[in-house]
Image (cartoon, rainbow, N blue to C red):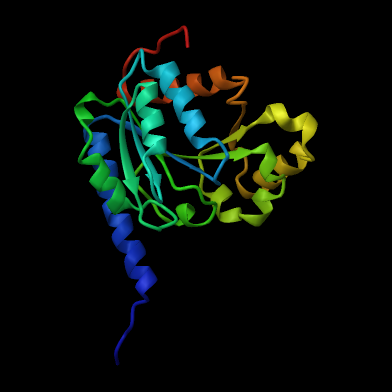
Amino acid sequence: MIKRVPVVERIMSANDQIASENHKLLNDFRVFSMNFMASPGAGKTSLIELTVKELANNWELSVIDGDIATSIDADRASAAGAQAIQVNTGGECHLDAVMVRSAIQQIDLGLTDLLIVENVGNLICPASFELGTHINVLISSIPEGDDKPYKYPQMYQHIDALVINKIDLLPYVDFNLEYFLKGVEILNPGLLNFQISCRTKEGIKNWTRWVAENVTSFTGEELITHL
């Protein structure tokens, strides 16, 4: 009897193996890593810029920017003060562990404390592919609507922190924050969330301090108290 293994199962198994290798490599170099996911326009790159600017005086930051084309996002991360690598997926709607491994090989991990991976803007594909990072972060935004947890449950189930961006638009957009957070709680009870505005900088200090605490805990370096 011939047993057939689905192609998708083989692909996911191979990806998970490489993700595990990425994770070990980052651990060996004591590099704390975060995978940023979001829909297009939610504010991933803007949040990365602000995070880099806030933390670059204390730690060395590297950014892997995943996009279908162009190097616009990597250029912005580099201008903010990070070592930046652009990964063009050539039409793929997500990064995978192989792409991240190739990018990591171009980074000086010995001069990196925090690695941020900016995934391709999509609320479906990125949730299925492990990259080897330590934390998965989803950036959601007020203009997207308050029904996203109900429409994209897999994404909200597999994250470690949620950033709700563009809260300065709450008075002008039909967005029920209580309804949104209820959906999040059902899918991921107790999930840590940060309500911010990249435009007005509201809530950014709380976010960057949390990131700094994670880097400090992982690397063993002293936390800079002014953050």
